[in-house]
Length: 559
Image 1 (cartoon, rainbow, N blue to C red):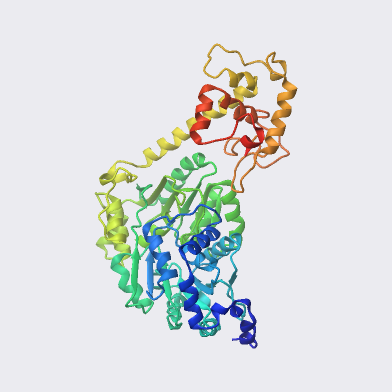
Image 2: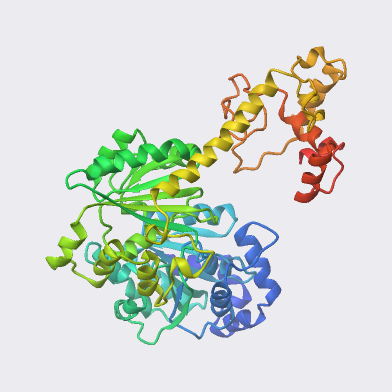
């Protein structure tokens, strides 16, 4: 502890609150928390007014953490995208938050959590050696838990009654990755703090619960466990001739890349050299632990979509939107790694294709040679070689549940149950065909009168191929002014990918974010958006999607 820390902490606003001065006041603060307080905390953490739980297990976990903190240590298993981060951000948003500490294993994940907390305006800081300040949410790299003055810092917070709880995020890494990152084994030191300990993960096979309990000295842990099945993910294994692995990967990626648009795909490589080599050949970004330009690569990929080639450094915990395709080059290291990495996709409920490319017979040779060093690797090999449902192998191991594609119509089918790369390509081809129809229609309208096009909906004899300025039925100048006024009223969401000029998605409009380029479909969007609702079919569509204003009200409709 650095000199003056104690005095500083005692002067902190957090310490001056009456409910944080003693253990008695701390308990009073917890007891005073109401259901409405919890809802308000969720609203702040999620940055929206309407909130709900993603699952009963998430609800049970958050209520246990806030209202029944005696249940400790607590291990929570929720699927990727199941809302684990809410379990520590919501408590930090209470009126009397105290301090919540979160131990984070990866730099990319820590940065992601920091950015999310700051966006929600949560009182948050990253602990670094010598840190003196308390905060409602303190994030710390797992590498700093021991030997960095952190435990002294946390113990003082605990002694003052201000430290409410400690989370260990992606807790499975404390035993699955401790062989190559020894400091992860030292995370168990947080068990010495006399506060509730909560461990979070998306991948803890029932068979390996004992290993986590051993690694975290948590033999009497309580569990809240949800099924981790990715219902919309199609699992596919593609075999290739020996020595043709990268050739097959490049062939498959090039076929898929042209269909992604702004959607995203991740190609997981087993080495840094292979990662960079494949990225060069695919002409896309790459990401690995030693790359100097990781941040730039990520930013470009997130904005433009397409593929990124990465190692497992991109595999755990980080929430990137719009990923619909993952491909593993060669056999993944184990089922836990594979579940984490393929689980990066589909976070918003999208359909996902998860492909493994492996040399013919390699998994079988490994089995015959006894090369699978652990049960996790053995299950991964079984997943690849099974003649039955791949999802069943995965579900039995991760959740101890028999889940097969064919038993539930809501489950996307694996290649053993009827789907495969050909089905994947059919879906992409259908999407590409729909896009072509839209583009051709807009191009055709651009060369004619959009106003007469709108009014002629359903009338195959109508003529709208004349120029709008020549239209006898419309005051072109007045309607052009209307178009310009209307476009100025349109509100673009922060996450929008719409052209700043015409309002169409950048997936279609070539202008994109470059306002210096000529608009691809000028003066069309507003007329279509305002004119179509006046037709019988268009009005029905607008009513169906729930627009309650008058379509003649430009300001309301633009919103």
